Amino acid sequence: MKEPNGRLRGRAAAFTLVEVLLAAVVLAVLLALISPAIGWALRAGQAAKSTGNLRQLAAANFSYAADNDGRFCPAQEPRNRTRWHGGRASGGAVFDPAKGFLAPYLGESRRIGICPLFQKLLTGGASFENSTGGYGYNAAYIGGTPANAFRANLVTAVPHPSRTVMFATTALARSDGVQEYPYAEPPNWVDPNGRMGGPLQPSVHFRANGKALVAWCDGRVTAETPAQLGGTEYYGGDSREARIGWFGPSHDNGYWNPDFEL
Image 1 (cartoon, one colour):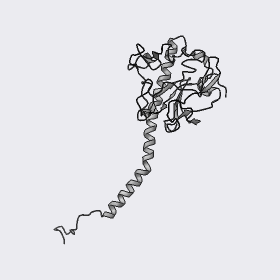
Image 2 (cartoon, one colour):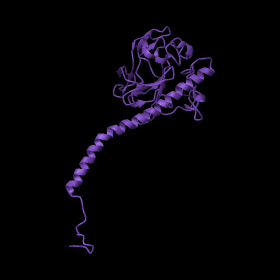
Image 3 (cartoon, helix red, strand yellow):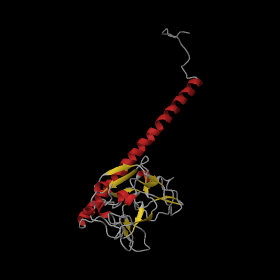
Image 4 (cartoon, helix red, strand yellow):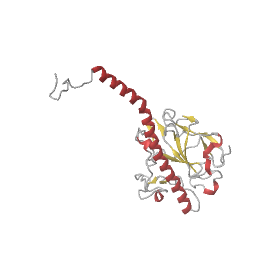
């Protein structure tokens, strides 16, 4: 039938069921192809923010040293009330993230920025102390020394700053899940004379697209691949499954030790 203007009148165009199904299949395939890329891009953006947090921590530590006779921030003090990332007024008081040694150098908030990659991975509520942001300090050699765990190292006593760890993304595997942990532990504990002892539980967390973010003693931040995942477990967790381990050489405690020689 013709309309008054001479054009043919027909039924409104419509998709058939086959066409709808075909379109749905094509869309599902496209989503399957791009979803990993979207996830990777999202994690890359979160890693960039975490990198910025680590740079801030390194800068805060250098500022602390400038105000304290060239000595880095202590990891903790003998009474164990004040640590690099927070403190408490007394032994039984609530831990305050704005009372740490680095707090005055962290801006108005006085707090460490939280790693966005870490928030969704926390699965338990039994962390020793919160407020690390998901980062750990090289307490064995920078926030302290083998000779004195409560006296931080001098900036000038680090002969290889470009390959000595200051901070890293960290976590601790425990029986009730992944927890915050304030220290980037070396592979082995060290006695006061600098001799290697037994193994420590790993704490470096490879959560940035399979890599750990590391702030070095020259202020750089890099992404490092694991040399080992898992290790000795003291708290009933599974460090391998949680992607916690170490990077770099392990002899002489590797990149944790300022005097380590390649």
